[in-house]
Image (cartoon, rainbow, N blue to C red):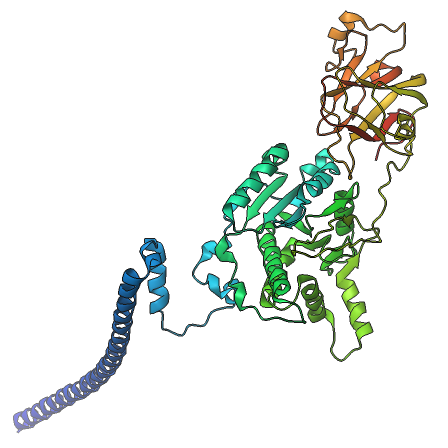
Amino acid sequence: MRRRHAAALLALVCGALLCFSWFSTVRRSREEILLFQQQMKALNEHLYRAEERYVQRTRDLKLLLSKVRTFNNRSFQRTNGNAKWQHLSVAERRRTVVSNMTGLDVLHIPSLYNYLPHLQGRHEGLTPAVEVSTRRAKVSLVLGIPTVKRADQTYLVDTLNSLIHELSHEEREDCIIMVSIGETNVSFVNTMVENLQNRFGLEMDSGLLEIISPPEMYYPDFTKLRETFGDAWEKVRWRTKQNLDYCFLMLHAQAKGTYYVQLEDDIVALPNFLSLMKNFAEHQPSEDWMVLEFSQLGFIGKLFKSSDLNIIVEFVLMFYKDKPIDWLLDHILWVKVCNPEKDSKHCERQKGNLRIRFKPSLFQHVGKYSSLSGKVHKLMDRDFGSPPLQSVNVNPPAEVSTSLKVYKQYGLPKAYLAEDFFWALTPKADDYIMFTFLQPESLKRYYFRSGNAEHPGDKLYNTTVEVFLPLGKNIGKEALKDGRNINSKSKQTEDGYLHIGMFKNGIAEGTIDPLLGNIASMRLHVLMDSPVWVILSEIRIERESTSHLT
């Protein structure tokens, strides 16, 4: 009996285990089926999206094929009917193909090419066709001068002479004068560059003077300009091109210096103009200013932070066909600070915080004939300051004399007293300008400047600065060889003078070795004949007891 119960219990347990095993198997099968169904659904979705992409790609390919066929037909017509196409380079043909086949609507951030659509895909349109540069950079100021061919008279050489003449040696190392020739006639541009190299070769080799010229493709088709403000088409074209010339110059100057100064090609400058501008900019109480004005005329003498040039160029290019650049500059200031709900007086006060005027004006307009053919104007800046010859007369009492033939009333005594300048006819070898002190003087420094703004070429060349010691103080040949006694650079002339300096670029300056002791006289000694007249515009001889030269 017990065996039967045990067998029945065993059968019951086995049946229960079999049922559980079957149930577990069925449950796992259902989970696998659900997972499989989900995977199939995802696969169907992928296939559906792939089919959609295939259909879209097919449409795009059909459209592209249509454009290629159209382009082939056009290119066939070009190659057979247009000789210009046959001379295009492979790169130019490839750009044309890409531009013609572009049919997708893509959003782009506005750039210069939006305002100059004729340069789309032609980046070389912003690259100078002619460039003479030593790649000088990281200077304090870049002076930008746009110039064009004038029908009546050119002033560029005189302008460059005036600017360079007023720069000290240190200032020449800390600035760039960038001239942009806004002409597309390559022959004319090359001739102009050659002339400037002949006249300013040293300045160009040193990096002080640079020249650029825009390519022909930079300029749009001017025949489509509309006349505005009652101006004739010729004037509208002139001011439109002028705006583009300003922008091209700014674009290539912005990376070279801290500040950019806009000038013209028919101006003269006051002495120390560069230091005055730099100091005025660096000592502004706030960085909120946008333009510092050193002339009240047009776009002359306007100083900008180089970091602001991109904003200025972009704004000007938006409206370069509509208004001249000095008007557009005023609009920039209005946009930045003027409140439409306030009156005009409030606006002018706000703009005054961005546009700050320096007086007196440092630049004077001298051009009579405008670059606009047939236009004659006599614009004069009434705030232009008369350049003082010397701020303080530090020269010791002396008798002055010269072997040069003096021109009119421009004698040496007034020049020595800082009352006028000295002007003489062409010097010959061994001519001199002599300063004999009333009593021997212990001298510290000397500074002589030749030429002036009106006659920058009338300089002293091949001329030495020499001193003569009091009689009885014979330093002798042995002393000359002893570098402990006097400056080893000093050389004694046959008549007993010591050579202590030389004119370079029309200027002679230096310190005097204190070991020389008291000096009886000083002379400027011409070594070679010169074909030009001579102007001595500044004479400064500083004694040990006087203040430092400024």
